[in-house]
Image (cartoon, rainbow, N blue to C red; front, side):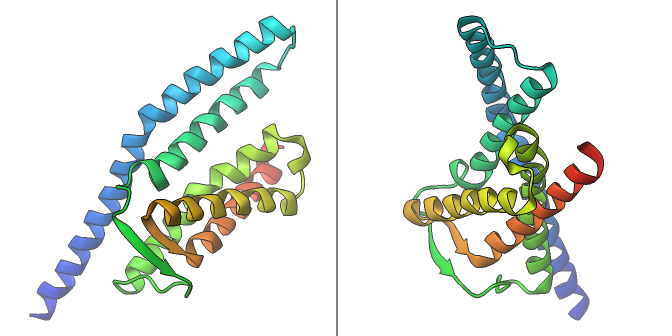
Amino acid sequence: MEICYVNQIGDKLLINIFQMFTTVIQALPAGMLVAVITFFIIAVLEKVKGIQIKRSKRRDVIIFAAYLMILFDITIFSRTIGSVNVIDLIPFNTPGGIRYIILYALANAAIFIPFGILAPKIIGVLQSSKKCLCLGFLVSLLIELIQLLLKCGVVQTEDVIMNMFGIEIGYWIYRKWIK
């Protein structure tokens, strides 16, 4: 009897992991659309304003715009408005036990690693960890507030904490290998 229970927990966990990957894959077309739109906006600005943007900077801006679209699609647009109205201010209090807490904590951190890498690459004033974390905190807080207002997600302090952790990992990667 206990083995079946463990298998059911494992199966539910695998289903949740699969659903997370599916949500990311479903967000990719929106991200690609934003990338194309951003590419054309940059091209028009370069032509009209006569501004020359380095190819690497242009690429980074396009990737960052696509990333932000994917981020907002995953955290807001892919959710049903009015479906969830929960505020959980106790960190790491996710229902389902330690496996789910770890899964969601890692997912929240992982989704913000690109922010920590890309934001300082394209926004010159974000060359310090504190400034990058401040902007990331505001973006994370914005997501939580939109989820609260639209009632389309569980508003959790743990999300913000792990998002900051992901940004710091991304910023460390940026400083260590990219810059």
